[in-house]
Image (spheres, helix red, strand yellow):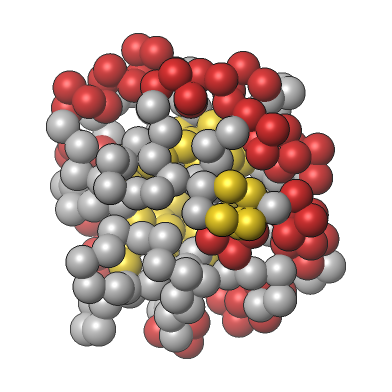
Length: 205
């Protein structure tokens, strides 16, 4: 089975369309004010409205309030939630939608034990650790630090590009890969050629 592909940090309808036409499986909408890829509800609605069928729309939150999350859910038809902060498992699963939990690969993190806390998650996203940054740093972590035999589906993130994603897949054998900065022309603005190259690289493995 081909590794699934999520392109995160979509801010423009035309970029979402490029992902779909190139063969991407999912897009990520970032609802986190400090991020340069943050979208308003209105921007998110415009992106979703432009998508063809069968593209999974993922909403990314970082320690958001319950009110903020529900406000998005009432206005944007998300299919999957992604929690990128310190949210406990009980909260992540409380919105009536499947979710994935991001873990930043900080030194000393017991990945297997932490992932086990989120037993109802559909997947665990592994991202690079950068102090004070919730994600999207563009850094690659040590792929050998991913433990064998994790029961949850692994989503590999962190510094992926068209040039290194095939190697990452070969080493980690993830269910999916997640990229943002590695396919951008500028922060929040995607590059169609890079998206196509990334998806082609994944498909070649």
